[in-house]
Image (cartoon, rainbow over all chains, first blue to last red):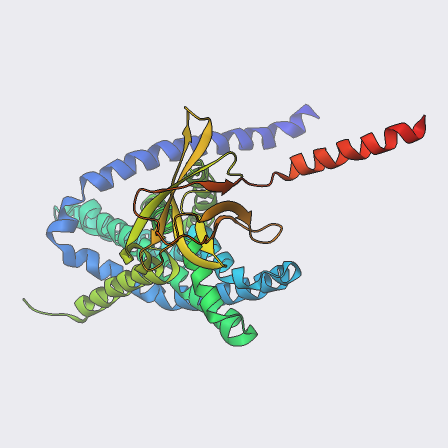
Length: 265
Length: 157
């Protein structure tokens, strides 16, 4: 009995210690990326190129999902609000849930799976094909030339994508609420404007998106950089990027929301 | 400087981000026209303001005429001192009365203004004298139960 339990327990313990280890290494990695960021700003074109790949190419999925999420919120909200005779509040419901929560969180989840996985796979493959080592041999720091631009590109892209997601979602809610169902146009916008506070709701959402951007890109670049240089290793690293990012985004969201809501008086 | 397609895309991306922020600020949020309207401030004292909040609406005849600018506790009179920022376009008589109301059963708390009949108008820094506090539902129920018990008590003897 004890013999049979030993193996799984050992593996569990090894995984746990490995996890703690990774957190420490990732923190050091984050410090190295920040330290190597000088090149990214001196040669900003490197960052712009990555913004194109991580941000601009994510636009379609972000805009379309934002539109659909907003429309679904509109439909679902209408269904419930109708019972209380408060269908005009549909704008408030759609805007607040998007700007505060869904915009940053869903955009970050999409960003992690659309751009984060690509970053990991690209860096992992560069490592596998020994391009990173080659750079090192030519006295070009891969940290400064490859990792840091991708990190900053993610940090820049994420808030913009989140804003676009929220804006498109509100537009989707407008399409369903006002155009399709026929809620009064004036009440829809005026109630929304009365309820949504720029600093408290919009800027806090932006802070969330910024934090998620840092988290996702650090995880993505680290997993790629740390991936075992085999086909299987890269594939595992890519999976881990998406899973870890999703968990970290949701956990961070809880912490950030708790901090932000506490101030409400 | 040479121009590349990447520059164009980057510019468009950042511009789209700013446009979205602008939409969220002006169309969705309240950073828009409201702040541009000129207001005058009037003070009101209530015994109980219920669930009134800063930036809550001030309505007269159901129309939004201003916002609650500030709420604080007056420690001399043990009352709530509420400052209303009223739209300059609307002038109210000096004997206007203010009351704390709720829109619907579950709706938001707001300040209702009922115009009086005097010729003089309220000016910046004036105080509204006639006020009516919020109706506290628990107190009402308590009173109802109390009177009900009093009615029932003699009948049982």
